[in-house]
Length: 98
Image (cartoon, rainbow, N blue to C red; front, side):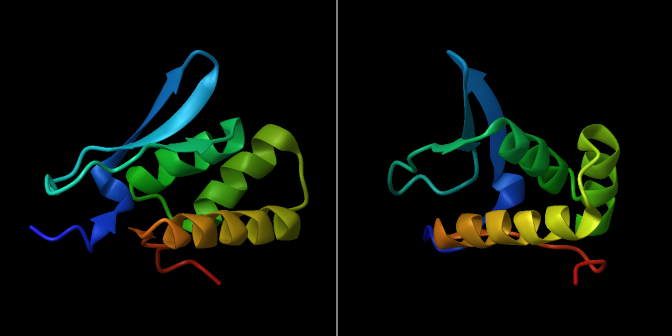
């Protein structure tokens, strides 16, 4: 299998020695896929994306947790998912994305 379609659902979030990692666990065995270091908030976002949660629901949960403006959260999550896409990780942003 070519390593061209790595989905967020092919990853897990793991915390090791105080750092969060997005670790590939999918079917691509052709090459080593280096884990991606992510922040605590990035880990929260990834865990929800992996479960298939839509962006607006993630915004709602983080808004309730951090009491940050929804528009700021939405823009930050879009920036974060764009970074994941830059690592060739396809992110289904859900039907409720902007």
